[in-house]
Length: 260
Ligand SMILES: [Zn+2]
Ligand SMILES: [Zn+2]
Image (cartoon, rainbow, N blue to C red; front, side):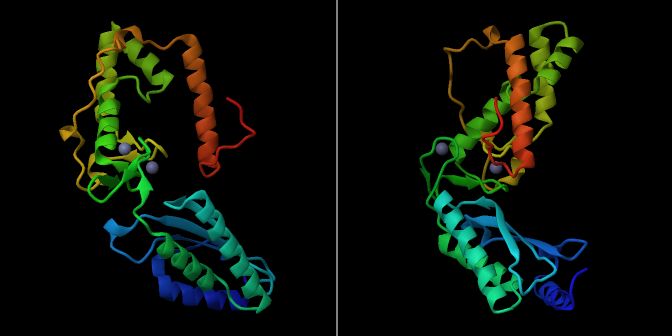
């Protein structure tokens, strides 16, 4: 059961942050998505903060975890996590409520690190204000690079389609060409996955981005009709899907324990 001191703290936090603060039903943990206090176009970093407290809180440190961090280098992520762990320990030492302090420290770090010096997630070259676009999942790309990804995805019948979907299409159609046309029709109604995190992107999710105006590369050397999914490829696709699901369940971390 939550203690009285904690309950007071939570009521104050609710008054300050309103719905931004997500409090668990048992009222021993909170989550909040944090961004720097700047205009949306100028925002390059974000993270989710999860703070869990035990019975002995505030005399024992809160458990704090920064997750779904975007726009920070691995070193900055490590330093953020260290700052938060230290802050929780300092608050416990002083027997002070820690949650507000932890939220504030996170915001300070995000504001310090909010820089537009990011790389395109496709070509790894720098993106600037002129060339960049940011997805709702906070991944950055050149408009050109993401545009070509949209082109590929919308015009390649097999890209990112599951083996099951491909086989189902083959069953309801007479030829490979018809199956491809069928898959393209299915895909035209689907949002395109973000190349990094696979979150679904609708065309109008990204401001000032119109992929239809972007010219795809012409790739005359590849004869797409000669490409088909062999049994071995279908099996590999299935195994990779297992790995992908595992990653999704573990906050997108790639685990050394999982083999492809
Ligand atoms: Zn790029
Ligand atoms: Zn993404």
